[in-house]
Figure 1 (cartoon, one colour):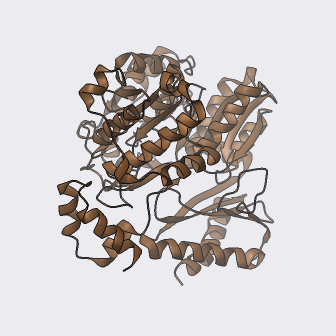
Figure 2 (figure 1 turned 135 degrees about the vertical axis):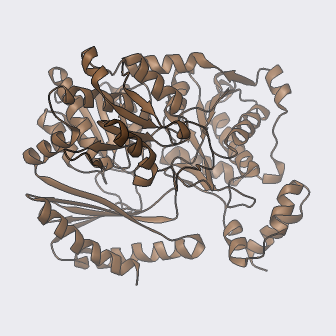
Figure 3 (figure 1 turned 45 degrees about the vertical axis):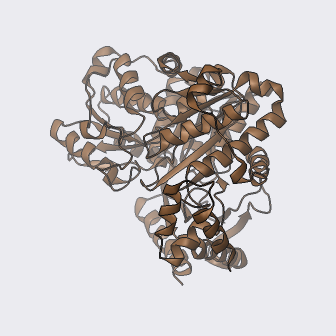
Length: 559
């Protein structure tokens, strides 16, 4: 019998698993479905544990949550000893199906292991969890979320004592602990008992107020009349952003910001969108429609856990143009640095990932700043920030990644769409008073630094076969090296280690004209991602070069 079949039979019949699990598994008839559920255990990737909700070793369910938490608890107890039992962990959850249940299971499993859990009493944004770990002095944290994934998914993001997602070394250590855990030997406490013993403590409104005060420190002076003149439409996409984003904007005096009412309702099925991904036009469709009715300057949306933000800006014809993550990062960088220019210098740090456009880096260098590059994933940006805090050698100013995640300020160690929402509204109002839209600002940056055509294209390859195909594609690209296509001057293989960064399954092809292509398997979805950055004098030349290069890689993927 195949190994996955043995595991399937075990989960389907063993008395440790509840009757609901037994019934769900007994009803399965598709062999491929059974294989996908059991051919492996869920693994930590760039975003932690993430998978489709359901019964099985390769699914998000209460048993895998308990197993992961037991392993994480063992890691924390080994690392911090009795101090872990004094400091505790913070646990938050978003709007997704079973997020609250998984968060409670997480808290109660920590409690059983003797580690107090500070559990939010309502759905809370990822950056708030990062802030809370730091504010309460916890030894770790967990947020139950699958970020912008489709409704079928949920996930488990683990954080260290700095409020940063686990780095490669700690993640590997946690994984080794999790792998030692026999899922049938895991336990959790009763909620009433845990609360009475002080091992589960509920987090209320006060921590949100402290978070919003920290975010507000990043605001810069804009006349009240200019704030009032801003017209904007915001959607939290049924997620955690509704309360913190609307409150920070209200506190800052932006009275002309409307919300998409049907998308302010917490809904794990995301019933008004195909996918709650703010980089896709469909996710912003209702916000854009509402913006058209009122003639808004901008429409924007945050993803379910409120760590990413997408924007659409009205152009001169009244149409709404979606910005890419790189474009938003460029105009936001330009604004933030311009408003802080008197304090900037070589010790001022700008951080981006290796798959993020060089445009924002060019902007930062023009202000005399030092630019740092990291691997993909905000945890790497957070790690560099922690180094600054420890060594006092640089001052963090701004960091972002092309996947629509930004952080201004040091109140968190993860991307924060609350502070980004505030600053995007602030800069839109600031430039509007000068007769400029964000499109005008972006075009001005292209005039100064050259045109950047930056695109990310992904191919979805699901299941075990898909994972094998992704590995084949990466192997083929490594073998082709400089012969992949004309004009390549160097191939950087980060799996072999380069640029002083941790090893990672990423390839980057550098072209003689300063352009590049990066390729990496996603750590959170069954995808392989291709990042294109073409730098030319004109938009037409850049787009033509992009299409040629994309055709070469499309042919390899579709072979």
